[in-house]
Image 1: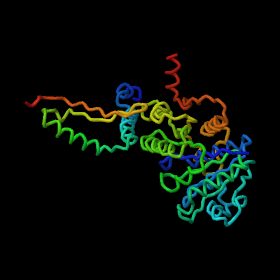
Image 2: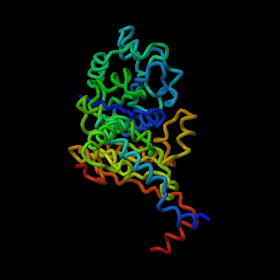
Image 3: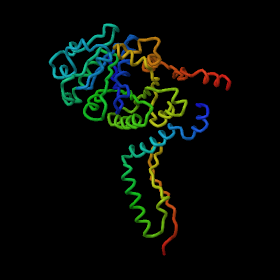
Image 4: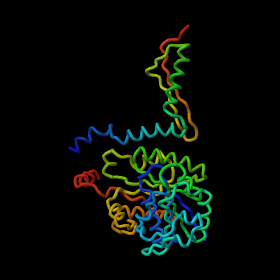
Length: 264
Length: 84
């Protein structure tokens, strides 16, 4: 088996990298793909709590690269989803405790065993970023429709080129259809025109994400979650399916619906 | 109210400002040119050109334009009078 290593990155913090990583990873596992999530945010680990696996950590990424334990021992198997594993970040070590060469080596080893290796990249463009992208074959860039996140995403697209990742995929997160309609939020086309990379998915702003994060259960496994549906679509596209982008007109008010009806 | 607001809002929709500001800042980011550098370039251009002709500094425009593959420096400098 030779798996694919995908880094999930954004430049800016707080745009939903970790949530995206957790949902895409869980979605791939649900589809039967053997998937491992690596939390590369050393010192600020979070993927474990988002996944609801925080109580099961024994060893971490640093233990693996320092050879304090076997890789197999550090991988946490998710009991809810077959095929899903997590390699947590160290919480007490410094960011420079890992070197890019070690990450490359780790990715190569995991490729033998897994279909997908997803790396949750820390915010920023320094050491942690360099580690996270070192072993990656492809990248998913997460942004939100605001000027600072899009600007940082553009910078990341430029930096990824120096790592020979020339076709990164874009996920636009937390789109608010009501604000887009009012003209107070950039829409998918605006962001996509500016960044000019392949669009992988659009995730609506959805309270169910907060609820599912509270519970430690990725929304992708919740059939009634809109964001969950958006993530299922993203997963299908990663798997090569052609899925149309979902309509974001679901929360139209009563009057808006009547207006649209009359326009037809 | 929402209905009335919409009539007046189209032109000032804040997303248009977001798009415009982003496009401008990204031209500079991508070319690694800061707005400060552009300002001093403009200032020096003004000084040099002023030796030869009288120009309108207020309406002088110097900007970078990013195309698909190349970046161009575009200057629009209104001339008031040629010095002789």
